[in-house]
Length: 279
Image (cartoon, rainbow, N blue to C red; front, side, top):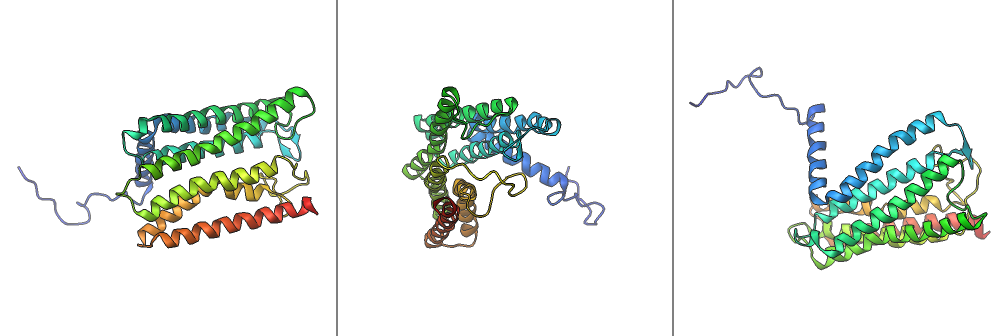
């Protein structure tokens, strides 16, 4: 039997799309899609975010400082950063044809992120618990070796991005707008080139220990860390720009201009950060 619903405000179904329940539902749908696209990377990112809770509690209880910052701030930053990378790659694996998501290339991406990312977070967290530095701590053979391994791990971690970019270039999803596809590929490649390049330079020069920006500790001049941050997060910024351009019907030329501007901004930050050391 068909029931007619009165068209008055009291009888209309409540629209929760813009309320808290609607937002919660959208977040749940996004997380479900994330796990569907690449479950292992999605789970790894979730575990890193969960690990931030005990690290944050330790930060509140432990007042030890290292180079002007609480010892637990660095593990928290790396947990968040690597979790974001894992979720970013998990999402973009979903741009590949279903058969390719189970191929050797994606398995290599997953192995690099979990192996190198897990090592980085594990060692940094261990050093925080000991009240010792992880970066630039080369005072003895053990710490010098671990710092070298951290550098290798960082390269392998960021190398997962151009590997996925190559897969997306080889097997594009032509149902997605071209400007979005280019934004994803450019973001992944530039994250490796810019973030990795600045990171290599940063590994040779210890930043100043003077107080900097709250929590981060960065300085806006004579410090390569802002450029390193901007470079690494091209993997998120350029795909978002590509999605925005696609919604407005823009072509690939616009994406090329955005990528060039982003690269220029990172290079300018790097030049500004290097100037203090070079001078």
